[in-house]
Image (cartoon, rainbow, N blue to C red; front, side, top):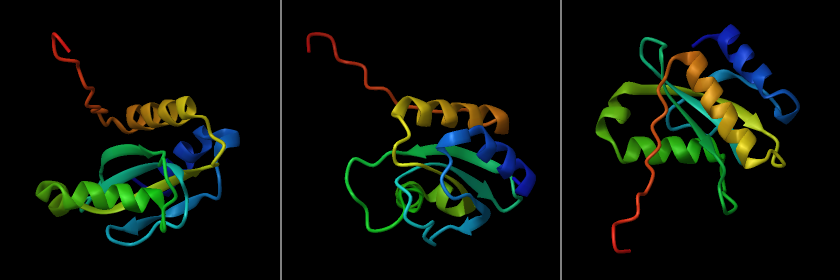
Length: 126
């Protein structure tokens, strides 16, 4: 992940892009106060290893991307060991959910990162 790649991904957001943050943020540091965003976790070699989205349902006291990154690394030792920084593509609060999801999918595809979403499958008889 580099500045030019970030610029390309941020450009994909078009009219939905809020104030760009063209610098990586060390894991553990706040990203600002964005609510909706695409975030990309990066390892020690500078390789993008995870792409996710934020769309909190309640107000946060810090950036939603920092909150999600913290949830990932606090719940998973391998992510805590591997991830060293993250990039944030902040989106306007008015960005529709389907646009956030489409941007996440496109960013992951451009970075060659598989998206893994756990979907809940109802049990038979439920």
